[in-house]
Amino acid sequence: MANHASAEKRNRQRIRRTERNRSVKGAVRTLLKKARAAIATASAKPGDSAAAVAAAIKAVDRAASKGVVHTKMAARAKSRLARAAHKQTKAASA
Image 1 (cartoon, rainbow, N blue to C red):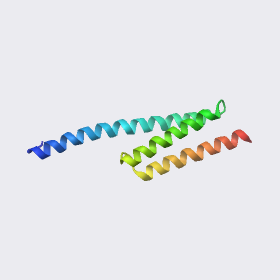
Image 2: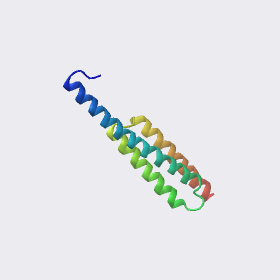
Image 3: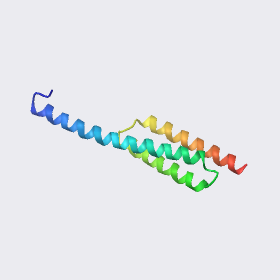
Image 4: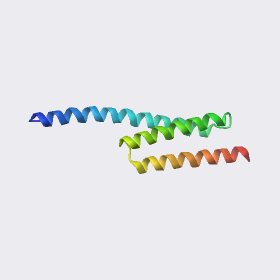
């Protein structure tokens, strides 16, 4: 329990930031899942998967720049998405 004003303020800040970070992380996870699903079912419309991957990469970059997720986590997620998308397009064209 906070015993002085500055500790109480830090506690309020922590609560606000945790809530905001949780919201951003949830949105990133959702976009990553949508991108993976679009890649998995991209035989119908390849343009949809490209748009989903672009949106996910943008969200991951934004979260990393804000410090919500680690920069290496962001790089890893983007790399895996790009590799899966490339693999899918290569298989579709062959």
